[in-house]
Image 1: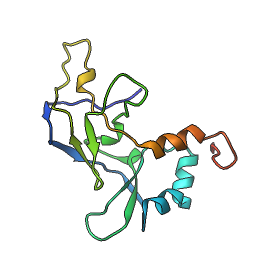
Image 2: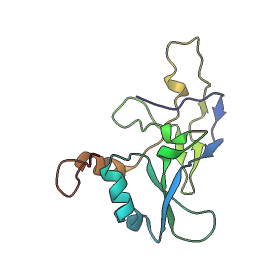
Image 3: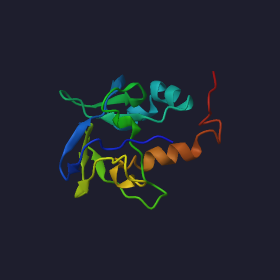
Length: 145
């Protein structure tokens, strides 16, 4: 399992960075982006780091594949769904990861438990709905190379 941990302490309202990756396409709406052949191809191959973001200029949305991202590797953030943990960040519509918790402490190599240093945001219901269906019908096949 992967995750992203704070290298330094953050406080509520701090911006950690911008979600990055390959721009798969530009679409009029989020629904069009997620229904596009490009998104279907990636999703059927197991892509789990696709997000739609508002472009800095213009209208519509960008479909971004975070699996190709670089620092600060925001695509490694986990969704705490199904755990006792809570979100401590939010991904803004334009793709910035912003701290929503009062404080996120820096990872401490001398501590046994650093869960409070893990950066977490909600992936949203659409993400989980698709992944619950993935591989269970011909409409949502898993493609293997």
